[in-house]
Each structure stands twice: as structure tokens, then as C-alpha cells.
Length: 193
Image (cartoon, rainbow, N blue to C red; front, top):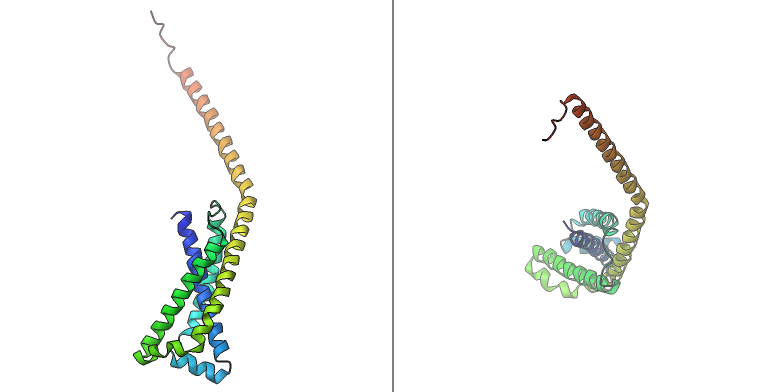
């Protein structure tokens, strides 16, 4: 996989974590009381949401890790952070709308018609703006951390090359000695007439 593939993995993972975060906070804000919040989650197909939060945290860790490990060696992106933010916001907005629609559809077609009357649905979009911005910052920070770690590791690579050069020269010396020793055992060359 090339570096663009790893960049996409990091962006999608950070985007998924942003969707889970905005989704969670939107429902908390829209349904502040505990009973109202629990009822809203259960009645709209969010019974699995505790697992989704764990998966969102895992996606966040994976996204940051992939960007740290593989982002530091990539050349600087041609597009700026605004493009990354727009891409993240679009990815998160579409994913959130699709996820909400599927959750409602699984509860019944009548629930799908109530989607646009749900305050949490509309609260999520301003939160997605913020999670996309936070995702951009995380990607930049993870990339810089990866570059810093890569710079610290580079002397080790140079030392390995030096070791390989020394070994290869010692192999050359040994091969010359072996060739010289084999010539001593061979009969003397015949004179060319």
C-alpha cells in the first residue's frame, strides 16, 4: 500500500471517530435528562451505542497511529488543512446522515419520517464542524510527531548502513584472501608462447 492509501485510512478512521463523538454529544445535548436520553436512544435504534463508542475510540487510536507511523515519511500534502477539513466534514456529515437514516429505517419506516424532527439530528451538524476541525488538528499533530520520531530514528538507519558497509568490505577482504589462497594451491600458470 502506498502512502496515499495510509493517509486515506487515517482520515477515514479520524472521521469515524468524529461521527461517533458528534453523534454522542448531540444526543446528550438534545436529551439532557437521563430518562429522556435513554428513551431517545432506545426508540431510535441506538441500543448498540456503547459498542459504537468503543469502536469510535479504537478508530481514533488507529487513525492517529497510522498517521504517526506512515504520515511522517510522506512528502508534504499539496492541499492545505482547509481541504482536509472540508473532506473530513463531508465524510462525517454524509456518514452521520446515512447512519441515522439506517438506524431509523431499522426501527420502522415511520421512524424515518421523524428523523428531520429530531433535535439531535440538527445539533450534530455544528458538532461535526468542530469534530472535523479537531480531526484536522489531530492529523497534523500526529504527522509532526511521526516526523520527529522518524528524525530520531534516522541515525540508527545510518549506523545499520555503516555496519552493512563494514560487513560487505570484510566479505570482500575475506573473498580476496580466499582467492589468493586458492591461487597458491593451484599449479603455476603456463607461460603463453
